[in-house]
View 1 (cartoon, one colour):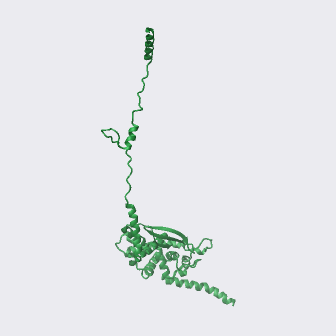
View 2 (cartoon, helix red, strand yellow):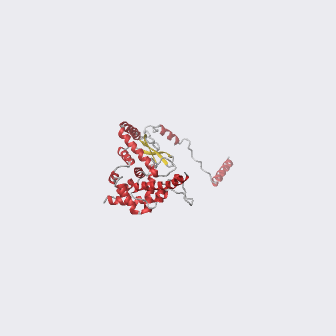
Length: 329
């Protein structure tokens, strides 16, 4: 009995290794040279594994490398595929092809989530985690087989079977820009408010955004980034505008109220110039009450002449004259 248990323990790792080799071949189209790289690419940080030296072992470093390689490879493919197109178009197309949403969907389509090792049980719906694993696998391919292998993987396994590059390039996916464009054409005020930031069971950030048009509540959107949540909120709001004519009516009614208030006449600005005194020639008296008060201020009744100050000679002369007058009497 114990002999069979030992044999099972020896066969079990080999069987799991063989299953992993087979699964990776179905995904990549080739067998790995260094299987440890691909194991690390599928190891999420939530598991908290460490190597012999005590350092954390996860797919974050390979994800960083794969992100850079994907930008270069997809940029190369887009440049050659769309000959003569401007830089802005090429950049926009590459961004769509390597976006978190696209990579997450590719990962699910290829069966990568079933191979990811993590402490949680929600990998099947987590585009954030799945997209990271896809990038990490590209990083593993680059180290294991080089740049040309990454190029073949993207061209033969992805763009030839899973993605139509032309449809992606010309498809309008920027729902936020679409909504803002509609708002500008109709001169309505639209804003995106970030309502909350929480975390899911795998400690990934989740953002919630809501659209407001002319102060009216639009739709909510949630995502693993602010950009993703805004895009979803914009998409749902656009769909609501198409489905609900009464929502559009309410928006333009609110716009009408706002513009009416803005266009109401403003009260005349108070005059700060001094009042003008108008005097009638016959009576030569001020006509207005303001003129009367001003005339009162300018009356001469209380004004008297200033007495002349006597000099020393004048005083002596007056004294002598008074003394001479007394002598005559």
